[in-house]
Amino acid sequence: MALIGVFDSGVGGLSILDEGLRQLPEHDYIYLADSINAPYGEKSSQWIATRSLELCNYLADQGCEAIVVACNTATAEAIQRIRLELKDIPIIGVEPGIKPASMQSVKGIVGVLATEATLKSDKFNALLATLPSQCQFIKQSGAGLVPLIEAGQADGEQALELLAKHLEPIQDAGADTLVLGCTHYPFLRRAIRKLLGDSITLIDTSDAVVRQLKRQLELQDKLIANDRHGDVTFISSKDGVSLATMARELMHSDLNLHDIYARALD
Image 1 (tube, one colour):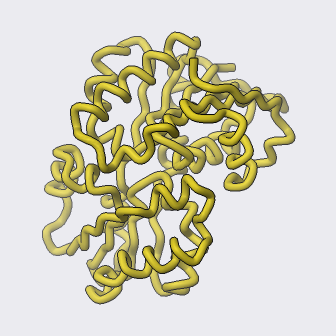
Image 2 (tube, rainbow, N blue to C red; image 1 turned 90 degrees about the horizontal axis):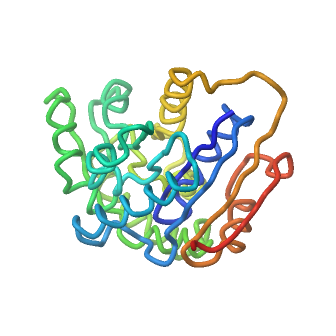
């Protein structure tokens, strides 16, 4: 059994935690949301890197044996620095699934919905440069979507209207595949389907991230096979109880199978 830290600017990383509880329910988890500072996508690179390192150090101090940086923006801006600082702990990042999208797209036209910080980051553009030039990527910032999701309005009319504006250039380009390039965006699946129907393939990397976590736990001999359901602790820089309540609303996992704790960040 291991204690796994999952860090995000807000509730977006709950999509990763959800998949973690599905594949690896026997482990204990700390989910840390920096909700008072969300969203990260509009902040400076230096601020994101410094804050992300600070919070990952906090998780390490809590005894976490692996940490998932479940935020595309934090991964893009800070993952190298975090790994240098926390050399003895596996650090798993997330990044937009543009590679699998390029392989799955029939038409070779892929929409990428992500934060402005992710789209401008060196890490994202270096990855983009490795992909086939015949695949066209329509990059679109999802400005304004994260605050609506944080406010519990992912299925609201305001989110639907804003999402429609962001998806318009992707639709106009004829994309048949859409990369959800922020961990918040899987919570917009219903809204996306309402707008686009089943005409577009959605790419979400939650499964791949947790499979990488599983590989890292195997290397540490931390995998166990039993019927245990581990504890889940929700910590927020704003309100831990509200975070836990939103987790129950957004996640598919049955949190009643786990002992749940909630508190504010120390």
